Amino acid sequence: MSALLNFNILKLILSITKDKTVTKPIVEPMPEKFRVKSKLEELDVFDDGLDEKYDSFISECEFDESVHLNRLLVHHNGVLVYSYAKEPYDINSFNYCFSLTKSIIGLGIGLLYDEKKIKLTDKVYKIFYPRSIPVNLNSTKITVKHLLTMSTGSKFNEASSAVSKEWIKDFFNDGNKFKIGQGFDYNSLNSYILSALIDKLSGSTAEEYLRTKLFNPLGIDDYIFEKSPEGIEKGGWGIYLSPIDMAKFGLLIQNNGVYNNKRIISEKWINMMTSSQNPVRMKGQDYDYGYQIWTNEKDKIVQLNGLFNQDVIIYKNTGYVVTLCCSNNDCFHTNNVLSIAKKYFNTLDMITYPHYERNNEYSDPSLLTVLSPLFNNKYELRKNKQGYDTTVLPIIIQMCLNEYSTGLKYISLKENKKDYSIKFKEEKESYTLYYNFDSYTRQVLSLYGNTYDVSVKGYLRREDSGESYILLKVIFLEFASVRYIKISKVINKDEIEIHFKENPGINFIENLIYTQDEKTIKFIEKTTNRIGEENVINKLTDFLYPYLRLKLKPKNNK
Image (cartoon, rainbow, N blue to C red; front, side):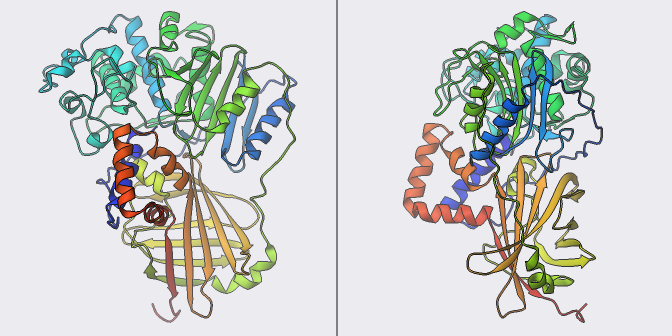
């Protein structure tokens, strides 16, 4: 899970339960610049005669409304046997991997271990001394193994890092939640310190070391790695990879450290890494923790896991390695996609399921005549019901990257020979989305110093009440986020209403609350009870699904 995302959402929840209107960024923006992936790979898919089985897996995922699968790769005994990308996703484009990054860092520590540059029993603070002179003497007991197994209990977590510029030093000075080595606390700053250890002990930066020792041998040459304020790769989150490159880490682990007949990392480290090193007692999941990786020893399953199910799953019983890219509203291992995948891939039996697809792509072309008066007009912001600064960028991505809107001023809707566009003008930004009602339009969106690989499609629909509206579906292809923009005319007025929704959304936040520690859950519940659960849900809904009203600007008014 993205640590920063976790913190920002929790802080949002705490803010609104105090009955305060959230109108400003929760933390100061720190833009992460990246580029759109341009290199395309031709995938050589071997036909093993089991496409019906794999198609059936896709169909069952479609049938389950909790599953939002957009890309899938299936390897069997090291061979790619199936590839799937749901329109308009691209199997080659970047995928923001969230906490799957941790497992890559775990492999990096294994490389240092093999080179005898680090030991599991090393006291971590000594490696950074005098940079990390601990005021909290208890933290001098933290070893490399404690970091690997999430057993430090460090209080310096996502919340602290968002307002700190010295992550290493502060990690050793904020105290611990429990006796070191005697608990499990999923804290991405453990992974950051591991990344910093690679930076310190490798003789180069963490990125350079991983590129030379891990990425290059795996044939990975196109990726992005976000850095901390200290200039070190974040470690706990922040890597962008294509699905085919994600899969390579699973293939390496499945083959005990060998890739393309070349040993990259020792079998000893892979065995330790994928064994249960710290028991986990988390509701709704049956995995323990190894070294920066999840393991289910009973079913012989190992999982590299990222938020919203950016997963590479290794099924030791059958030789399958399955790579999933999803936008599910779940944390960790609670989504049904994992139980469905287990049914299909933890067995060699042929499984088929009645084929089914969700009918969510419907559009009524006859409504274009009714809605055509909306086009070739400019609309100024009249009323923002919630008082939030709304933008095309989904709230979840804003929180991941600390990118926040400067406030919408107006929009323009244009039509030109069945080509359509919507221009957004904010206080300090201006950007345009292009679309039509027949197919997805892929484009690069430049916003707040970043570029986003997006695909947009328009739909013409009618409510049960008879209201006609335009629905724009904006898919952020690198992320697990889809932005929905509903545009409708206000009856008998020269005004329009715009409703924003996104997925993952409100269901994810509800699920996220109950993955927190018991003390945090009790505090949230106590505060929620004070002002009313319905009030809290309404405020969360308003924040994630804002509503704007805009007034038609006369064309002679420049």
